[in-house]
Length: 237
Ligand SMILES: [Zn+2]
Image (cartoon, rainbow, N blue to C red; front, top):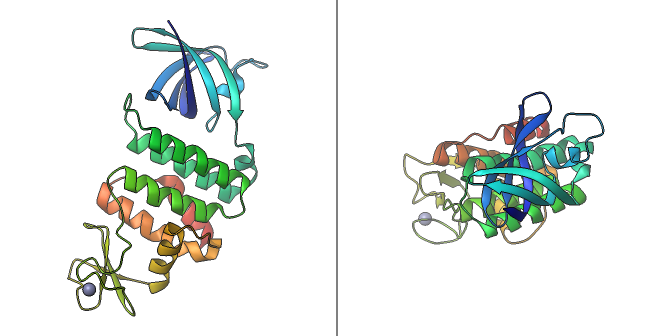
C-alpha cells in the first residue's frame, strides 16, 4: 500500500550501513517511524528527507506496521535554523517537545500546524526566542498544561507588586494569596509571558525570564527536560 503524508522529520537512527530509521511527525497519522534506504551514500537522492526539520510530503510504502520512504517532495527545510545558534536551539526545542509529548500514532492536527507555523517564524523572523516562548505556551495548552495568565489564581485580581508562581496549578498568585508551595518570581517575567500570550513580540533579552519559567514549569509539572531549551537559556545568560 502507498501512503502520502505531510510530515516533519524529528530525528533518526542509523540502521545497517546506509539506511536510517526516521521518526516523522505527520499531520494525518501523528508520529510514525519509517525506514529510509541508502541515505548515507554520497549523492543519495533522498538524503534531504532524512535530515531533522525536513518538512515534506512523504510517500511511504506501507506493509502492516512497517513503512519505507519511497519518495519525498520538500516543502521547507528551514535551512536558516542551521545558520544561527539561537534559531537552531529554538527550532530544536520544538522538535524535542514533539518527541516527548506526541505519542506514536496519536493524531494532533492542532499541534502539527502550530509546529510548522513556529518553525517558520523561528527560521525566517527576527525574534526566535519570543517565538519559542509562544510555541511552548500554546503547545502546553494543547497538551493539557495551560499556564493561567489571567491575574491571581485565587482572587482573580490583576497582580501588582510581588508575584508568586505555583507549578502544580500553572498559576500566578498575589502576595496576599500566595502559599508556602509558591516561589517568588520577577514581575517582568509574568509581564513578558502575558505580552507574548497576547500576541506581542519581545526582544531576546525580554524573553530570558519567560524561558527560565517555562523550563522550570516543564521540569516540575511534566517531569520532562528539554535539553535544547537548557542550551538556549545558557546562551542567553
Ligand atoms: Zn490573590
